[in-house]
Length: 432
Image 1 (cartoon, one colour):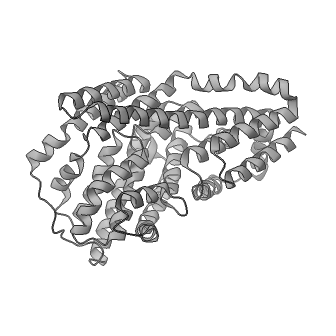
Image 2 (tube, one colour):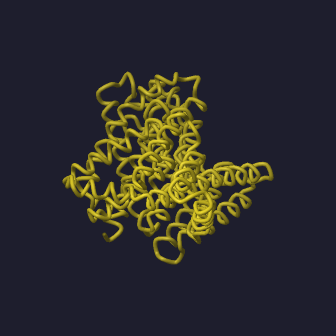
Image 3 (cartoon, one colour):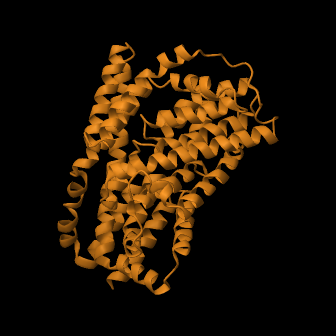
């Protein structure tokens, strides 16, 4: 009976999500309804009443608002504007050098952001007008920035990775280390796409950009020193073991505020905007996490999670068969769900399966974030695409942006395949 309730609960959740009910509300309502059917209303209330506190009270989660605040302060204070100019100094000589510079700048922005959407918005305002004026096809220019934005959630500090680490009970620092390699590999693959298109289709990506302002090395260095200082401070302390993830976030947020104040770039209006965006984003993430923790308890008591594990054991898939199913699940969910919802809805069911197959949860966390970020640039609800449409809609239609990002999706699939066939790509820095 309980397993049946679990199955119906899972179906009800999928229906609610298909009806565009907010993820947190869908998770909480299904958990409450399912537990009430199994145990009665009073018992369900008693068991679920502690779930929100048990999830939110985890000390490690306090890293989320700290890293978010660091990123929003850097964005609103304009500390990241020089990243694109600095990247052009190094890569402008390459075919498609301005586009490659935007990918490199996105990687730099990722180190102080942790958000795919923020990275796309920031780089879109700066790089797309310059690429279009330099002869790039507008759809490809917009697609480049939309794809580059996904690096924002791969290179630490990644908010997705922090929440995954808390939920899967693995070291966030180790997941961050794995994220560095897959983030850099993604940036490299996107750059190779740009070089290839420039070589084959100079009508889309000019081999030599024109109309772009030249920037000197000294000017570029002056522009990016705040980001370099913050990166060395935060990640030097984190990866050397001096800071925990939470402490690194606090140091990063405080450092961003102090640097912005010292440069005279932080005023009351920009600080208020950074704080409000931090509060709203943190609240949205935590309420989804609360719903996921309640849903996990519901599935556990229903026995459905164990049933799924038993079914997988009976099927006895090979490693590659299991990974193919997992990739297909997340690519499908990415078509209509945002990353946090897709991750927290599926982990309660899938984590026991990975433990059964002795799959490294550090490695899987990094692969999972990569798969979720592919969903940010796939139709029909690729969030990065809509962000680019919002900041540069005068250059290309929504359909044109989806077409422009298609080539980068091929690169993403190749990166996923490499990570599956060669797990050490991710684990090389983790010691795993």
